[in-house]
Image: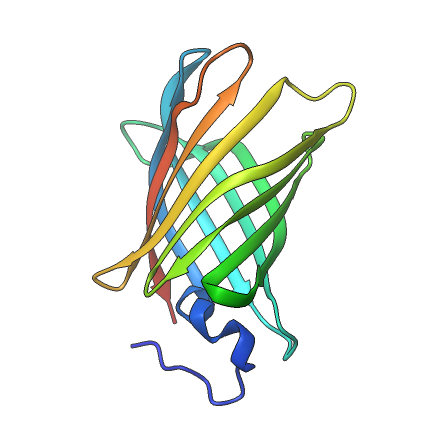
Length: 165
């Protein structure tokens, strides 16, 4: 069972349920790619300042054995709580994409949309996304919709992760 650490700074307390090491699996798909199952690990930490650090690693899974086939997405970033239950999520990807999300924090639920997306000249075309994170029966569940490579905003990825102590 996760316990709120007394030394968590007040500004990040609304996000404290994200803290920890999470592992699980999900599904990725889009009109321009073949759907696949993936595994994911997420580490959410803090160093005493008013933000959380986010590190996520994912890999494609063999549909029959469940074994790792190849690396998939990697993202690093920071959750920055703001006043009035608002939050920013800043993410960087090794594929040349930087995202800034903005949204709202409710108890055990965060709803975000991209405020801006920056791409390197060789990164894929990607214009916007939404994400929702929720704590449901002690599991971190999340979904992402994306508008990219000429497609309108639509479902792209979802996963369910368990906190590993």
